[in-house]
Image 1 (cartoon, helix red, strand yellow):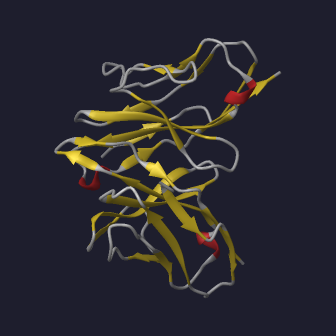
Image 2 (image 1 turned 135 degrees about the horizontal axis):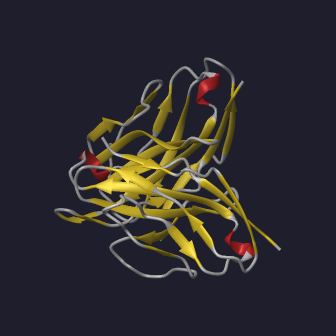
Length: 116
Length: 111
């Protein structure tokens, strides 16, 4: 298994540009998450999904959109890039085995995004 | 609401010294606590989870519900332990069983 993969690894955007960060997992996990990591701030949840067709906002969703058309893919869309979105973005996935029991979250390698 | 606090942003010790990374949480229900480690510019990896009660790479962590703490300890630090450590909380009752992370502690083990 490749686990959780993310593309691209690095990207520089100009203010106002848009882009999609790709995330794919091959572990048949039903739960997927997007986090941003800023220095000294830990990881903040942007959006999450509990299954194909179901998404919900996390702590910091403004300026982002997501979709989940398949179990494997969970792309994150930035419509109008702003300098405040300069960050490292991590995708993660997790499987719910039965009610109240969840496996650990597995993380992707991250995408380092700079908005100038 | 759930919250995780790691009071030390930076922690520096010498090789062979004991190390303790502090983590306190607030949550009214029954949380699950984790420690994740991130080596330089790599992805986060699970180090420990409280329900496993195991030792990984010499690290242990005990959940103290009375003090709402989940401190990470290692009796003899090694240089390869230098990394960013995140404490995280997950709650069954929370939609999506999201992880709430602390702000992280950067551990440096000096030779």
